[in-house]
Length: 120
Image (cartoon, rainbow, N blue to C red):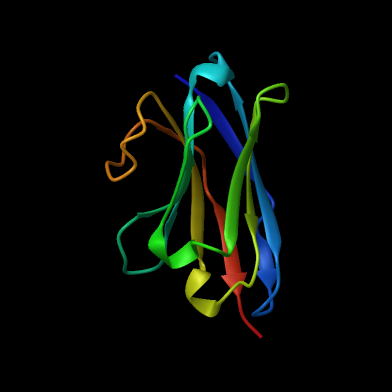
């Protein structure tokens, strides 16, 4: 099992930026596929972005061109840079660790979640 600790959420105005971080422990980080999902009130959890152990990246359609996922295997950390934030990006963001990059399927180990609120 992989332990995940997210940080970096908060309140930001529309058009602003935030960077989320997720520190992982308990496994060989470089072998793990890492992702970010989000869940807004009353909605299903959805993929934001995923990065495989080999560096292949997938984004959810609503964040393409605005968000960037990256990983630092030396620091056992995955990042989510969020730019041009919109009110509809408001959600709890969850870090995810798994073996397998079928990002349409929600499974694996999860962090506790970090709240992102986009509001003026």
